[in-house]
Image (tube, rainbow, N blue to C red):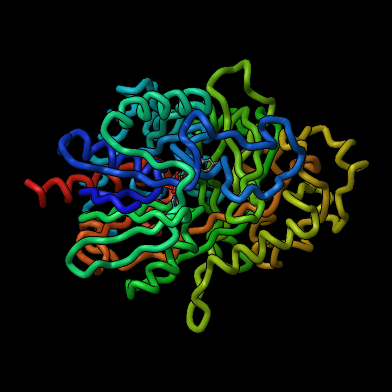
Length: 464
Ligand SMILES: Cc1cc2nc3c(=O)[nH]c(=O)nc-3n(C[C@H](O)[C@H](O)[C@H](O)COP(=O)(O)OP(=O)(O)OC[C@H]3O[C@@H](n4cnc5c(N)ncnc54)[C@H](O)[C@@H]3O)c2cc1C
Protein backbone atom coordinates (compact mmCIF):
# COMPACT_ATOMS: atom_id res chain seq x y z
CA UNK A 1 0.00 0.00 0.00
CA UNK A 2 1.34 3.46 -0.89
CA UNK A 3 -0.32 6.65 0.33
CA UNK A 4 0.64 10.29 -0.18
CA UNK A 5 0.51 12.86 2.67
CA UNK A 6 1.42 16.50 3.04
CA UNK A 7 3.45 15.78 6.18
CA UNK A 8 4.80 12.53 7.63
CA UNK A 9 6.13 12.47 11.19
CA UNK A 10 8.41 9.65 12.38
CA UNK A 11 7.86 9.06 16.09
CA UNK A 12 5.19 10.33 18.43
CA UNK A 13 7.27 11.22 21.43
CA UNK A 14 7.11 14.73 22.86
CA UNK A 15 8.72 16.25 19.75
CA UNK A 16 6.47 14.50 17.20
CA UNK A 17 3.34 15.13 19.28
CA UNK A 18 3.90 18.87 19.46
CA UNK A 19 4.80 19.07 15.76
CA UNK A 20 1.44 17.42 15.01
CA UNK A 21 -0.42 19.57 17.52
CA UNK A 22 0.87 22.84 16.08
CA UNK A 23 0.15 21.72 12.51
CA UNK A 24 -3.41 20.92 13.61
CA UNK A 25 -3.77 24.45 14.99
CA UNK A 26 -2.17 26.28 12.05
CA UNK A 27 -3.11 24.11 9.05
CA UNK A 28 -6.17 22.05 9.97
CA UNK A 29 -6.71 21.04 6.33
CA UNK A 30 -3.39 19.18 5.96
CA UNK A 31 -3.02 15.42 5.53
CA UNK A 32 -0.67 14.38 8.32
CA UNK A 33 0.45 10.87 9.25
CA UNK A 34 2.52 9.83 12.26
CA UNK A 35 4.25 6.46 12.33
CA UNK A 36 5.48 4.94 15.55
CA UNK A 37 6.94 1.53 16.25
CA UNK A 38 5.19 1.45 19.64
CA UNK A 39 1.56 1.36 20.77
CA UNK A 40 -0.98 4.12 21.35
CA UNK A 41 -1.16 5.68 24.82
CA UNK A 42 -3.61 3.04 26.11
CA UNK A 43 -1.78 -0.01 24.78
CA UNK A 44 1.66 0.50 26.32
CA UNK A 45 2.50 -1.98 29.06
CA UNK A 46 5.97 -3.05 30.22
CA UNK A 47 5.89 -6.73 31.35
CA UNK A 48 7.99 -5.85 34.44
CA UNK A 49 5.59 -3.08 35.52
CA UNK A 50 2.62 -5.39 34.81
CA UNK A 51 4.23 -7.93 37.19
CA UNK A 52 4.49 -10.61 34.49
CA UNK A 53 8.29 -10.93 34.68
CA UNK A 54 10.96 -9.88 37.16
CA UNK A 55 13.70 -8.95 34.72
CA UNK A 56 13.73 -7.17 31.39
CA UNK A 57 13.03 -9.68 28.63
CA UNK A 58 14.20 -7.25 25.94
CA UNK A 59 10.93 -6.92 24.04
CA UNK A 60 11.51 -6.20 20.37
CA UNK A 61 9.87 -2.81 20.87
CA UNK A 62 10.19 -1.46 24.42
CA UNK A 63 6.82 -0.27 25.77
CA UNK A 64 8.58 1.98 28.27
CA UNK A 65 10.36 3.95 25.56
CA UNK A 66 8.16 3.62 22.50
CA UNK A 67 4.64 4.57 21.51
CA UNK A 68 2.47 7.65 21.96
CA UNK A 69 4.27 9.88 24.48
CA UNK A 70 7.64 8.30 23.62
CA UNK A 71 10.26 7.98 26.34
CA UNK A 72 8.42 10.56 28.44
CA UNK A 73 5.11 8.71 28.76
CA UNK A 74 5.93 7.06 32.09
CA UNK A 75 8.22 9.81 33.30
CA UNK A 76 7.07 12.05 36.10
CA UNK A 77 7.12 15.01 33.76
CA UNK A 78 9.60 17.40 35.26
CA UNK A 79 9.14 20.29 32.91
CA UNK A 80 12.13 22.65 32.98
CA UNK A 81 11.77 26.24 31.79
CA UNK A 82 15.36 26.88 30.79
CA UNK A 83 17.86 26.95 27.96
CA UNK A 84 20.72 26.07 30.34
CA UNK A 85 20.04 22.33 30.05
CA UNK A 86 17.63 19.94 28.41
CA UNK A 87 18.95 20.57 24.91
CA UNK A 88 20.93 22.74 22.55
CA UNK A 89 18.16 24.63 20.73
CA UNK A 90 19.98 27.91 21.38
CA UNK A 91 22.57 26.72 18.83
CA UNK A 92 19.82 27.16 16.23
CA UNK A 93 17.73 30.10 17.43
CA UNK A 94 18.01 32.80 20.05
CA UNK A 95 17.28 32.12 23.70
CA UNK A 96 14.12 34.25 23.75
CA UNK A 97 12.57 32.23 20.94
CA UNK A 98 13.41 28.97 22.73
CA UNK A 99 11.89 30.22 25.99
CA UNK A 100 8.74 31.40 24.16
CA UNK A 101 8.39 27.95 22.58
CA UNK A 102 8.89 26.24 25.96
CA UNK A 103 6.21 28.48 27.53
CA UNK A 104 3.91 27.76 24.60
CA UNK A 105 4.25 23.97 25.01
CA UNK A 106 3.47 24.42 28.70
CA UNK A 107 0.34 26.38 27.83
CA UNK A 108 -0.87 23.44 25.69
CA UNK A 109 -0.10 21.02 28.51
CA UNK A 110 -2.12 23.21 30.87
CA UNK A 111 -5.09 23.09 28.50
CA UNK A 112 -4.88 19.33 28.93
CA UNK A 113 -4.68 19.36 32.71
CA UNK A 114 -1.10 20.30 33.72
CA UNK A 115 -0.62 21.99 37.07
CA UNK A 116 0.09 25.73 37.37
CA UNK A 117 2.42 25.17 40.35
CA UNK A 118 6.00 26.17 39.53
CA UNK A 119 9.16 25.67 41.58
CA UNK A 120 11.66 28.48 41.14
CA UNK A 121 15.36 29.03 41.80
CA UNK A 122 14.58 32.73 42.18
CA UNK A 123 13.23 32.73 45.73
CA UNK A 124 15.08 33.79 48.91
CA UNK A 125 15.30 30.13 50.03
CA UNK A 126 16.64 29.03 46.63
CA UNK A 127 19.20 31.83 46.58
CA UNK A 128 20.38 30.84 50.06
CA UNK A 129 20.73 27.27 48.81
CA UNK A 130 22.71 28.48 45.80
CA UNK A 131 25.10 30.34 48.10
CA UNK A 132 25.51 27.36 50.42
CA UNK A 133 26.23 25.12 47.41
CA UNK A 134 28.85 27.58 46.15
CA UNK A 135 30.68 27.35 49.49
CA UNK A 136 31.38 23.74 48.52
CA UNK A 137 32.19 24.45 44.86
CA UNK A 138 28.80 23.11 43.77
CA UNK A 139 26.98 25.20 41.18
CA UNK A 140 23.19 25.29 41.21
CA UNK A 141 21.80 25.91 37.73
CA UNK A 142 18.88 28.32 37.48
CA UNK A 143 15.55 27.03 36.25
CA UNK A 144 11.89 27.19 36.93
CA UNK A 145 10.49 23.68 37.07
CA UNK A 146 7.04 22.09 37.05
CA UNK A 147 6.46 18.62 38.41
CA UNK A 148 3.53 17.11 36.54
CA UNK A 149 3.72 13.77 38.34
CA UNK A 150 3.84 10.32 36.73
CA UNK A 151 0.08 9.73 36.87
CA UNK A 152 -0.87 13.27 35.77
CA UNK A 153 1.68 13.20 32.95
CA UNK A 154 -0.04 10.12 31.55
CA UNK A 155 -3.49 11.72 31.82
CA UNK A 156 -2.27 14.84 30.01
CA UNK A 157 -0.93 12.65 27.19
CA UNK A 158 -4.23 10.75 26.97
CA UNK A 159 -6.10 14.03 26.67
CA UNK A 160 -3.72 15.31 23.96
CA UNK A 161 -4.03 12.01 22.10
CA UNK A 162 -7.84 12.21 22.09
CA UNK A 163 -7.65 15.70 20.56
CA UNK A 164 -4.88 14.94 18.09
CA UNK A 165 -6.28 11.73 16.66
CA UNK A 166 -9.11 13.70 15.04
CA UNK A 167 -6.50 15.42 12.88
CA UNK A 168 -3.44 13.16 12.60
CA UNK A 169 -3.60 9.66 11.13
CA UNK A 170 -1.65 7.51 13.56
CA UNK A 171 -0.02 4.27 12.48
CA UNK A 172 1.10 2.43 15.59
CA UNK A 173 3.19 -0.77 15.71
CA UNK A 174 4.72 0.53 12.51
CA UNK A 175 8.46 1.05 12.38
CA UNK A 176 9.91 3.07 9.55
CA UNK A 177 12.63 0.88 8.06
CA UNK A 178 13.98 3.18 5.35
CA UNK A 179 13.83 6.81 4.25
CA UNK A 180 14.20 7.55 0.55
CA UNK A 181 14.78 10.95 -1.07
CA UNK A 182 12.49 11.37 -4.10
CA UNK A 183 14.62 14.25 -5.37
CA UNK A 184 12.29 17.26 -5.36
CA UNK A 185 9.17 15.12 -5.11
CA UNK A 186 9.40 14.70 -1.34
CA UNK A 187 10.25 11.53 0.57
CA UNK A 188 9.21 7.89 0.67
CA UNK A 189 9.15 5.91 3.90
CA UNK A 190 9.13 2.12 3.79
CA UNK A 191 7.74 0.49 6.89
CA UNK A 192 8.69 -2.82 8.49
CA UNK A 193 5.42 -4.18 7.06
CA UNK A 194 6.54 -3.37 3.52
CA UNK A 195 4.05 -0.49 3.07
CA UNK A 196 5.23 2.84 1.75
CA UNK A 197 4.22 6.36 2.67
CA UNK A 198 5.12 9.38 0.55
CA UNK A 199 5.16 12.93 1.82
CA UNK A 200 6.05 16.45 0.79
CA UNK A 201 7.39 17.41 4.22
CA UNK A 202 9.18 14.95 6.47
CA UNK A 203 9.67 15.45 10.21
CA UNK A 204 11.89 12.91 11.97
CA UNK A 205 11.55 12.68 15.75
CA UNK A 206 12.80 9.16 16.51
CA UNK A 207 14.07 9.87 20.04
CA UNK A 208 16.87 8.00 21.73
CA UNK A 209 15.33 4.60 20.97
CA UNK A 210 15.54 5.25 17.23
CA UNK A 211 18.78 7.23 17.27
CA UNK A 212 21.11 4.57 15.92
CA UNK A 213 18.70 3.62 13.14
CA UNK A 214 18.21 7.28 12.26
CA UNK A 215 21.95 8.01 12.19
CA UNK A 216 22.42 5.16 9.72
CA UNK A 217 19.60 6.46 7.52
CA UNK A 218 21.12 9.94 7.52
CA UNK A 219 24.53 8.57 6.57
CA UNK A 220 22.90 6.78 3.64
CA UNK A 221 21.13 9.99 2.58
CA UNK A 222 24.40 11.93 2.70
CA UNK A 223 23.37 14.11 5.66
CA UNK A 224 26.31 15.22 7.78
CA UNK A 225 26.45 14.01 11.38
CA UNK A 226 28.35 15.89 14.04
CA UNK A 227 29.86 14.01 16.96
CA UNK A 228 27.90 14.37 20.18
CA UNK A 229 28.51 13.29 23.75
CA UNK A 230 27.53 10.37 25.92
CA UNK A 231 26.90 10.78 29.64
CA UNK A 232 27.82 7.88 31.87
CA UNK A 233 27.13 7.47 35.53
CA UNK A 234 24.96 5.95 38.21
CA UNK A 235 21.58 6.54 39.82
CA UNK A 236 21.86 7.42 43.48
CA UNK A 237 19.11 6.46 45.93
CA UNK A 238 18.99 7.64 49.53
CA UNK A 239 16.43 8.49 52.22
CA UNK A 240 14.35 11.47 51.05
CA UNK A 241 15.17 13.31 54.30
CA UNK A 242 18.80 13.75 53.21
CA UNK A 243 17.77 16.02 50.32
CA UNK A 244 14.51 17.41 51.74
CA UNK A 245 15.99 20.86 52.48
CA UNK A 246 16.87 21.07 48.76
CA UNK A 247 13.95 19.34 47.03
CA UNK A 248 11.37 21.24 49.14
CA UNK A 249 12.83 24.48 47.79
CA UNK A 250 13.68 23.82 44.13
CA UNK A 251 12.18 20.33 43.63
CA UNK A 252 14.85 19.31 41.15
CA UNK A 253 18.31 20.69 41.77
CA UNK A 254 20.79 20.67 38.91
CA UNK A 255 24.13 20.84 40.68
CA UNK A 256 27.37 20.88 38.71
CA UNK A 257 30.82 20.16 40.14
CA UNK A 258 34.24 20.00 38.50
CA UNK A 259 36.33 17.20 39.97
CA UNK A 260 39.74 18.08 41.36
CA UNK A 261 41.30 14.82 40.17
CA UNK A 262 40.48 15.04 36.45
CA UNK A 263 38.81 18.42 35.99
CA UNK A 264 35.70 16.65 34.66
CA UNK A 265 32.26 18.21 35.15
CA UNK A 266 29.84 15.94 37.01
CA UNK A 267 26.19 16.90 37.42
CA UNK A 268 23.07 15.79 39.17
CA UNK A 269 20.26 15.01 36.77
CA UNK A 270 16.60 13.96 36.93
CA UNK A 271 16.02 14.25 40.66
CA UNK A 272 12.99 12.39 41.96
CA UNK A 273 11.96 13.23 45.52
CA UNK A 274 10.04 10.34 47.15
CA UNK A 275 10.49 8.52 43.86
CA UNK A 276 11.16 5.14 42.35
CA UNK A 277 14.15 3.84 40.42
CA UNK A 278 13.25 2.03 37.19
CA UNK A 279 15.07 0.02 34.54
CA UNK A 280 14.81 1.13 30.94
CA UNK A 281 15.67 -0.69 27.76
CA UNK A 282 17.58 1.21 25.10
CA UNK A 283 17.92 -0.93 22.00
CA UNK A 284 18.27 -4.13 24.01
CA UNK A 285 20.51 -2.69 26.74
CA UNK A 286 19.21 -2.20 30.28
CA UNK A 287 20.02 1.15 31.78
CA UNK A 288 18.52 2.84 34.81
CA UNK A 289 16.25 5.84 35.32
CA UNK A 290 13.85 7.28 37.90
CA UNK A 291 10.48 8.96 38.37
CA UNK A 292 8.14 10.08 41.13
CA UNK A 293 4.39 10.38 41.61
CA UNK A 294 2.62 13.61 42.56
CA UNK A 295 0.13 11.65 44.71
CA UNK A 296 1.69 11.21 48.21
CA UNK A 297 -0.03 7.81 48.52
CA UNK A 298 2.14 6.50 45.66
CA UNK A 299 5.42 7.97 46.84
CA UNK A 300 8.37 6.12 48.38
CA UNK A 301 10.58 7.14 51.32
CA UNK A 302 13.57 7.66 49.03
CA UNK A 303 14.88 10.30 46.69
CA UNK A 304 16.82 9.28 43.61
CA UNK A 305 18.89 11.20 41.08
CA UNK A 306 21.50 10.54 38.44
CA UNK A 307 25.14 11.54 38.70
CA UNK A 308 26.52 11.88 35.21
CA UNK A 309 29.94 12.44 33.70
CA UNK A 310 29.93 13.80 30.14
CA UNK A 311 32.28 12.21 27.63
CA UNK A 312 33.21 13.81 24.34
CA UNK A 313 35.66 12.16 22.01
CA UNK A 314 38.06 13.55 19.48
CA UNK A 315 39.53 12.01 16.35
CA UNK A 316 39.80 9.16 15.47
CA UNK A 317 36.91 7.91 17.62
CA UNK A 318 33.53 9.44 16.78
CA UNK A 319 30.95 6.99 18.09
CA UNK A 320 30.15 8.02 21.68
CA UNK A 321 26.86 6.13 21.35
CA UNK A 322 28.67 2.82 20.89
CA UNK A 323 31.00 3.58 23.80
CA UNK A 324 28.03 4.18 26.11
CA UNK A 325 26.32 1.02 24.95
CA UNK A 326 29.40 -1.07 25.65
CA UNK A 327 29.66 0.26 29.19
CA UNK A 328 25.98 -0.35 29.91
CA UNK A 329 26.24 -3.83 28.45
CA UNK A 330 29.11 -4.64 30.86
CA UNK A 331 26.90 -4.07 33.90
CA UNK A 332 24.13 -6.02 32.12
CA UNK A 333 26.58 -8.88 31.58
CA UNK A 334 27.54 -8.95 35.27
CA UNK A 335 24.06 -8.55 36.71
CA UNK A 336 21.77 -9.74 33.93
CA UNK A 337 20.21 -6.27 34.09
CA UNK A 338 20.65 -3.29 36.39
CA UNK A 339 23.34 -3.62 39.06
CA UNK A 340 23.08 -2.09 42.56
CA UNK A 341 25.84 -1.47 45.11
CA UNK A 342 26.03 0.26 48.50
CA UNK A 343 28.32 3.29 48.43
CA UNK A 344 30.27 2.00 51.47
CA UNK A 345 30.90 -1.33 49.75
CA UNK A 346 32.08 0.45 46.62
CA UNK A 347 34.67 2.62 48.37
CA UNK A 348 35.85 -0.37 50.43
CA UNK A 349 36.30 -2.50 47.31
CA UNK A 350 33.67 -5.06 48.38
CA UNK A 351 31.01 -6.53 46.15
CA UNK A 352 27.48 -5.96 47.49
CA UNK A 353 25.66 -9.29 47.62
CA UNK A 354 22.13 -10.24 48.70
CA UNK A 355 23.22 -10.61 52.32
CA UNK A 356 24.91 -7.19 52.44
CA UNK A 357 22.04 -5.50 50.64
CA UNK A 358 19.64 -7.10 53.13
CA UNK A 359 21.46 -5.25 55.93
CA UNK A 360 21.06 -1.86 54.22
CA UNK A 361 18.96 0.76 56.03
CA UNK A 362 18.07 2.21 52.62
CA UNK A 363 15.70 -0.15 50.86
CA UNK A 364 15.99 -0.27 47.05
CA UNK A 365 12.86 0.76 45.17
CA UNK A 366 14.06 -1.15 42.10
CA UNK A 367 13.83 -4.60 43.64
CA UNK A 368 14.79 -6.29 40.35
CA UNK A 369 18.29 -4.74 40.53
CA UNK A 370 20.99 -7.32 41.23
CA UNK A 371 23.63 -6.58 43.90
CA UNK A 372 27.13 -6.44 42.46
CA UNK A 373 30.29 -4.44 42.01
CA UNK A 374 30.18 -1.25 39.96
CA UNK A 375 33.97 -1.00 39.87
CA UNK A 376 33.97 -3.98 37.50
CA UNK A 377 31.55 -2.27 35.14
CA UNK A 378 32.38 1.45 35.05
CA UNK A 379 35.71 2.87 33.84
CA UNK A 380 38.00 4.14 36.64
CA UNK A 381 37.84 7.76 35.54
CA UNK A 382 34.04 8.00 35.62
CA UNK A 383 33.88 6.06 38.88
CA UNK A 384 36.48 8.30 40.59
CA UNK A 385 34.54 11.36 39.35
CA UNK A 386 31.30 10.00 40.81
CA UNK A 387 32.85 9.15 44.18
CA UNK A 388 34.40 12.63 44.43
CA UNK A 389 31.04 14.23 43.57
CA UNK A 390 29.27 12.18 46.25
CA UNK A 391 31.69 13.49 48.88
CA UNK A 392 31.13 17.05 47.59
CA UNK A 393 27.35 16.62 47.79
CA UNK A 394 27.73 15.22 51.30
CA UNK A 395 28.83 18.68 52.44
CA UNK A 396 25.62 20.26 51.10
CA UNK A 397 23.37 17.34 52.00
CA UNK A 398 25.03 15.42 54.84
CA UNK A 399 24.18 11.75 54.56
CA UNK A 400 24.77 11.54 50.81
CA UNK A 401 28.02 9.63 51.43
CA UNK A 402 26.46 7.25 53.97
CA UNK A 403 27.47 3.60 53.75
CA UNK A 404 23.95 2.57 52.70
CA UNK A 405 23.48 5.08 49.89
CA UNK A 406 22.56 2.93 46.91
CA UNK A 407 24.17 3.29 43.51
CA UNK A 408 22.51 1.71 40.48
CA UNK A 409 24.39 1.25 37.24
CA UNK A 410 24.84 1.99 34.66
CA UNK A 411 22.88 5.11 33.91
CA UNK A 412 23.79 6.12 30.40
CA UNK A 413 22.33 9.10 28.59
CA UNK A 414 22.81 8.63 24.90
CA UNK A 415 22.65 11.73 22.81
CA UNK A 416 22.20 10.85 19.23
CA UNK A 417 24.83 12.05 16.81
CA UNK A 418 23.88 15.64 16.14
CA UNK A 419 22.70 16.36 12.62
CA UNK A 420 23.94 19.35 10.71
CA UNK A 421 20.71 21.44 10.73
CA UNK A 422 19.71 24.94 9.70
CA UNK A 423 18.25 27.49 12.11
CA UNK A 424 14.85 26.07 11.08
CA UNK A 425 15.94 22.54 12.10
CA UNK A 426 15.99 21.51 8.45
CA UNK A 427 18.54 19.00 7.20
CA UNK A 428 20.62 19.59 4.06
CA UNK A 429 17.72 17.95 2.18
CA UNK A 430 14.88 20.42 1.53
CA UNK A 431 11.67 19.99 3.57
CA UNK A 432 13.24 17.24 5.68
CA UNK A 433 13.34 18.34 9.35
CA UNK A 434 14.79 16.62 12.41
CA UNK A 435 13.58 17.29 15.95
CA UNK A 436 13.88 16.09 19.53
CA UNK A 437 16.38 13.81 21.23
CA UNK A 438 16.92 11.59 18.18
CA UNK A 439 18.29 14.50 16.18
CA UNK A 440 20.75 15.21 18.98
CA UNK A 441 19.33 18.70 19.53
CA UNK A 442 17.35 18.16 22.74
CA UNK A 443 17.45 16.01 25.84
CA UNK A 444 14.31 16.82 27.78
CA UNK A 445 10.57 17.26 27.43
CA UNK A 446 10.48 21.05 27.24
CA UNK A 447 12.97 21.54 24.41
CA UNK A 448 11.80 18.38 22.59
CA UNK A 449 8.24 19.79 22.50
CA UNK A 450 9.60 23.21 21.54
CA UNK A 451 11.52 21.75 18.58
CA UNK A 452 8.31 20.14 17.29
CA UNK A 453 6.38 23.42 17.47
CA UNK A 454 9.24 25.22 15.72
CA UNK A 455 9.24 23.00 12.60
CA UNK A 456 5.43 22.97 12.42
CA UNK A 457 5.54 26.76 12.26
CA UNK A 458 8.25 26.69 9.57
CA UNK A 459 6.20 24.26 7.44
CA UNK A 460 3.04 26.28 7.98
CA UNK A 461 4.91 29.44 6.93
CA UNK A 462 6.00 27.77 3.66
CA UNK A 463 2.45 26.67 2.92
CA UNK A 464 0.88 30.07 3.57
C1 LIG B 1 12.18 7.13 32.45
C2 LIG B 1 12.39 8.50 31.83
C3 LIG B 1 12.11 9.63 32.56
C4 LIG B 1 12.29 10.90 32.01
N1 LIG B 1 11.95 11.98 32.75
C5 LIG B 1 12.04 13.21 32.20
C6 LIG B 1 11.62 14.34 32.94
O1 LIG B 1 11.13 14.24 34.06
N2 LIG B 1 11.77 15.57 32.37
C7 LIG B 1 12.30 15.74 31.13
O2 LIG B 1 12.40 16.88 30.67
N3 LIG B 1 12.69 14.67 30.39
C8 LIG B 1 12.56 13.42 30.90
N4 LIG B 1 12.96 12.33 30.17
C9 LIG B 1 13.47 12.57 28.81
C10 LIG B 1 12.30 12.81 27.85
O3 LIG B 1 11.38 11.76 27.97
C11 LIG B 1 12.84 12.90 26.45
O4 LIG B 1 13.74 13.99 26.37
C12 LIG B 1 11.71 13.14 25.44
O5 LIG B 1 10.76 12.10 25.51
C13 LIG B 1 12.27 13.23 24.02
O6 LIG B 1 11.22 13.32 23.11
P1 LIG B 1 11.39 12.84 21.59
O7 LIG B 1 10.06 13.02 20.97
O8 LIG B 1 12.56 13.48 21.00
O9 LIG B 1 11.76 11.29 21.66
P2 LIG B 1 10.98 10.00 22.34
O10 LIG B 1 10.13 10.52 23.44
O11 LIG B 1 12.06 9.08 22.63
O12 LIG B 1 10.05 9.51 21.18
C14 LIG B 1 10.55 8.94 20.01
C15 LIG B 1 9.49 8.02 19.41
O13 LIG B 1 9.95 7.62 18.12
C16 LIG B 1 9.59 6.27 17.90
N5 LIG B 1 10.51 5.70 16.90
C17 LIG B 1 11.86 5.58 16.98
N6 LIG B 1 12.35 5.04 15.85
C18 LIG B 1 11.28 4.79 15.05
C19 LIG B 1 11.14 4.22 13.75
N7 LIG B 1 12.20 3.80 13.04
N8 LIG B 1 9.90 4.10 13.23
C20 LIG B 1 8.81 4.51 13.93
N9 LIG B 1 8.89 5.05 15.18
C21 LIG B 1 10.11 5.20 15.71
C22 LIG B 1 9.71 5.62 19.25
O14 LIG B 1 8.90 4.46 19.32
C23 LIG B 1 9.24 6.74 20.19
O15 LIG B 1 7.87 6.62 20.50
C24 LIG B 1 12.79 11.04 30.69
C25 LIG B 1 13.09 9.90 29.94
C26 LIG B 1 12.89 8.64 30.49
C27 LIG B 1 13.20 7.42 29.67
